Image (cartoon, rainbow, N blue to C red; front, side, top):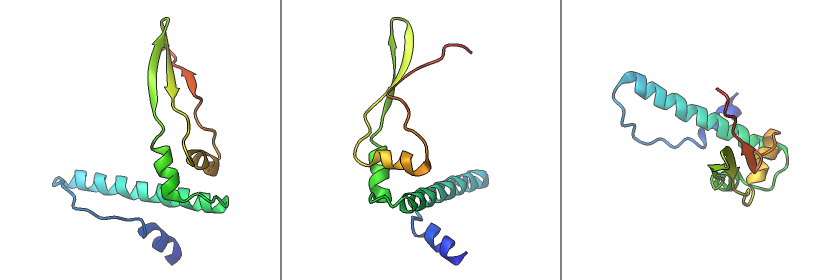
Length: 109
């Protein structure tokens, strides 16, 4: 248990919170903690898969992935950029495929 807590708090960077309403402070804290848990889980999954890519490098490369909605002849699509660097490692570590490069957008409600 101590090892898990130590692993979680190593990535915790605390900055001043600019919220005064208690519900917003709690919400901000919950989101930050959830992000920290997800960061720790991905780092562990990368390590378990013997990935040579560091968590920081993978996240930086995933952050470069962009998607845009395009319309052609009355049909809408989502087009994403190529995966850069080690971005594929993130998808591989969590056991899912990256989203397709081109995906039709459903027009039904």
